[in-house]
Length: 210
Picture 1 (spheres, helix red, strand yellow):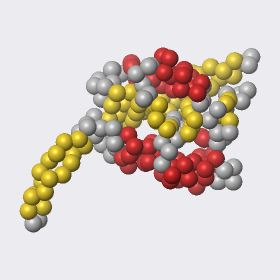
Picture 2 (picture 1 turned 90 degrees about the vertical axis):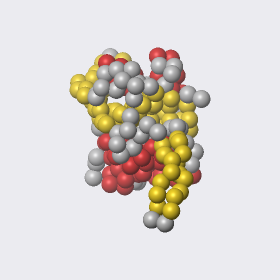
Picture 3 (picture 1 turned 180 degrees about the vertical axis):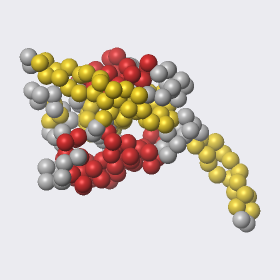
Picture 4 (picture 1 turned 120 degrees about the vertical axis):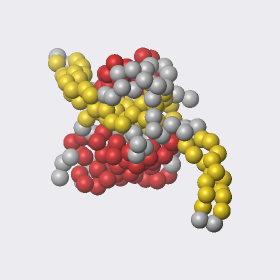
């Protein structure tokens, strides 16, 4: 399935705390970090494994090795993704990092996305995770994925978010049908400024406010 909702009870507990308008900046950031870790561990479960034999202090043991953890690139969309990616890195400590900085432009009632900085490492054949807590219209995510493909062709393209919408999911998959989308919740609607409703507000502003 191209869309996976992470319904782990602790992930849902953390999301509820993030939605609460009384949750302040520091706790909001910590919640994003913790959710990033949970999403990361869910992603790790999709990687291939192989049996290996190791020597313990007292004998031999057969164990499991995850294959491909050294072939991961995480691309974060600034700025809201920063704490979320901090959590993802707990699951993928060997990952290389890319950055896409984009801003929304609102002119005459129309909303567009402008990328004003991008630095993505060479990603040919790697697993690429593009991270943004909010997948609203999908416009920013699509722009970030375009930057990914300028750096090479990934083996897998994964979109990691906290909250998505049906519109955002459909827009991403219509352009990149091979993408895999992982999210903690799918909310039903967007308001007239393209913010997710009920959502959790502006994730960047809430994460970096006092």
